[in-house]
Amino acid sequence: MAEKVRVGIIGCGGIANGKHMPSLHKIEQVEMVAFCDLIEERANLAAARYGSRDAKVYTNYKKLLEDKSIDVVHVCTPNRSHGFITVHSLEAGKHVMCEKPMAKTYADAKKMLEASERTGKKLTIGYQQRWRGDSLYLKEACDNGELGDIYYARAIALRRRAVPTWGVFLNEFEQGGGPLIDIGTHALDLTLWMMNNYKPRMVVGTAYKKLGQQKNTANAWGDWDPEKFTVEDSAFGFIVMENGATVSLETSWAINIAEPCEAVTVLCGDKAGADMLDGLRINCVKKGRLCIEKPDFKSGGVAFYEGSSSDPSELEARAWIDAVANDREVKTKASQALVITRILEAVYQSAKTGKPVYFKD
Image 1 (tube, rainbow, N blue to C red):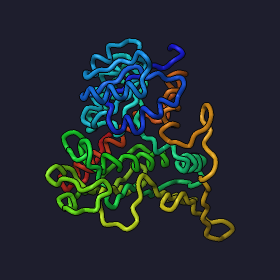
Image 2: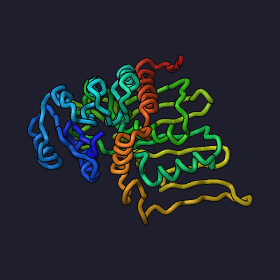
Image 3: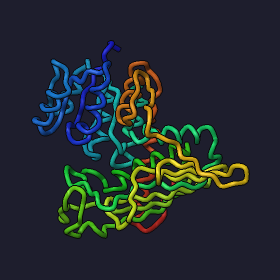
């Protein structure tokens, strides 16, 4: 690979502008050389702000993929198109960073993983919450066995009134669902990553649209249009893993809860426990006394590759580009994200049928 990693962006909307392009722009080794969006003006604006001198603009992603000089593609489109765009990109010889969730359906996600394995190209999924300071600290504690056998966990993403009213977030066809697939996916990813447990046995799920038809909602981004609210506003899952561990998944964009919290986990092991409900807290017994330890993350940064940063999105981007440039294993594996998508789909399926979903393999 050339000294510079040449990147193409497919989808120049909110997540590309809020996360991917600003993070990549901070990496000296990266050149963003191509931008694609169905709305040409958005692609032009992205190219003007973040692109190389010779950056090209497209409205058809397949034309972008014809450029053999592009090493990496970032897929930042609605969930429905994650699957086929990623597969086409891998088959065109590109390494792919796809924004979370991996795909709208488990079948699509599986095709993405198979395409990566078939082509030998790297595939990762954008779960930047792993790169927070508290997440990295807790992951190290889990990997060191400080919590012991983690047999119960809660994956939590609960907002009081923060329904995203822009883009296609409320569109079931484009997204596949609401808060479960949008923010619940982050909480579940964090939890299973901490547990290092990706073998679900059974899922029971429920989903609700209790507030979606209301008006005068005090929503953080203004009232939503009830006619366009075609997804759930809350969803909950009860997941039993093959080893008997239990995970409770709680997610909502709008629920009557006094103390919301998002993308956090609660872990209970046989040696100690941990939660992110009031900063990171490790609870244990020392010298015959109950003890709570609370690490301080207010000062300093996380050293990573070159320089230091505490921005999770930048750390994620740096780790990804390093994996591509130096042929290292990606940090967020597609095989892990595949399990997340499978569980989310099972929660929706169980909610619709009123029956548990059992995994056969």
